[in-house]
Amino acid sequence: MGGLKVNKKANTILFMLGATVLNVVLMVVIFLGLMLLYAWLVPGGFQTQLGQVIGIVLFLGSIGLTYFLYHRMIKWISNKWNLEDHFDPIFRGRKGKSSDEK
Image (cartoon, rainbow, N blue to C red):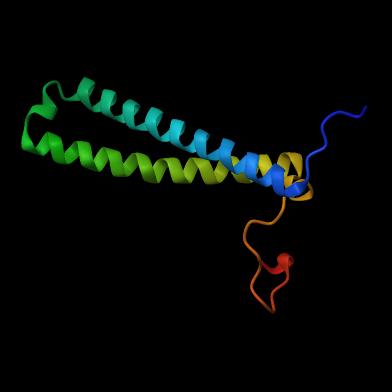
């Protein structure tokens, strides 16, 4: 009775689903934070056409910041718990290159 044993492919799928949810939640939190910061710094700033453009820029900025933070977090988590031993490779290496050369 050693508990639930899950194979590498199932581990990978579950991790990707969890990471996707984390990514979306992180993006929403960052976007709302940037919007609140802008609204606090520039009261009534969203009522103008420029404010709407700034809203779009903040949304795109939140996507970029989310990508950066998500990439850093996944890399840190992968190194901390040595996830390569527990997951199936998502992307296969190119022919002629070993995984050590990446």
